[in-house]
Amino acid sequence: MTSRNGRCTVVVGCQWGDEGKGKIVDVLAEDVDVVARYQGGANAGHTVQVGENTFILHQIPSGILHPGKRCLLGNGVVLDVLQFFQEHDALVERGIDVHGRVGVSERAHLLLPYHTALDRASEDRAAQKIGTTGRGIGPAYEEKAGRRGVRVADLRGGVRVEQRVREGLERALQRLGGSGDHLEEEVRTSLEMGGRLRAMATDTGREITEALAGGRRVLLEGAQGTALDLDHGTYPFVTSSNTTAGGAATGVGIGPTAIDTVVGVVKAYTTRVGYGPLPTGFDPEMDQRVRELGGEYGATTGRPRRCGWFDAVLARYSARVNGLTGLAVTKLDVLDTLPELTIATEYATESGGSTRDFPADTWSLESVVPRYETLPGWETDTSTATRLSDLPKNARAYLDRIEELTGAPIAMVSVGTRRSQIIRL
Ligand code: GDP
Image (cartoon, rainbow, N blue to C red; front, side, top):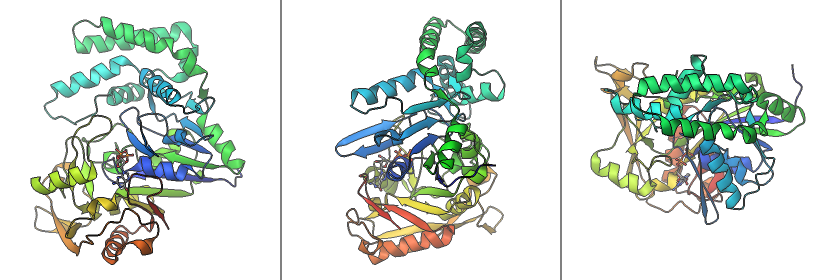
């Protein structure tokens, strides 16, 4: 329906999140005009290093750190109002000019303080914990799917929105038991910010479509990763939204044909935070070693991440589910000191067979035994490489093998936290 000459790129995590999407988005954002988030909420934590400054962004797209870029939160996002303005105002305090640059979809759902309270209570009580970030994401999406949510557009509606919120609060208090005085107070504060939020309200689908028609470039930024996708991940140890590339179209309000490029971000090894299986997990000693080398502690919760070898079964699955056009491999430098590297190429199953497909049955994933292939390490510092040819031969062989096994061409390799520490192909 639209004629356009702009380009639209999706950046998606291909493991269990924390792949370093923030860094890749930050690098790609330089060349685009609009950056939009399409799902999740304040459970995401992108860490971006600009010069000597480290920024951790939970809701506002990391494109905000590039002057002049328009940053959008799509309808697929659940917006924690208090957190959002905290983050917004902290950027202003640190000298980032955000004026007129942040837009919020009118169709985005609000995440209110009672969602957070419900999330924490249900994790505390659950026999089978998911390991959520406790930021209210699950309960907010439950209300959205249950048609009880409150959207940015509703903030116009005086009595109606107040009634919806009151009902939501009452339902939450019933489930929580006990008193909710502080919740009422926090909900009131959130709604008082409604005016500020309304001033930022926009139709993200229309904005993006018009930007593309005008020849501008758009980046759609995913949070979490493919293995945490509500449909395609290791259910029930997943997040409550579609993190995969298909979710990008729905989550901002454009058609899938508007997307040209899908960049999948994978760490050069694997990590996982929260509960649920991690087939290629290291033994405790190696786990500790790589966690320290890679600084593998959650940006949102500070929780230590479990670490493991590169899982090509998962990466190949992610390449297919997301329709990747390219792969961005991050944190290659973290492996610089290891004498040998191992890649899981398939899983041996309980029945005595093997599979190269990532299983739907999450419980069977607990018992699969990965079949590994060992490659020699490079034991050389890679952190100053800016071209593929700067990398040691063994590092290139490792990347070639990842490319071969996943079936997606490598488009970028990240060798450090800084913007300049990137190889673009
Ligand atoms: P995200 O949620 O996918 O953006 O991932 P996080 O921000 O939680 O984790 C990425 C962490 O790794 C951040 O602290 C980044 O600064 C860091 N990082 C990203 N790319 C690289 C890299 O190539 N090498 C190293 N050593 N660190 C990196």
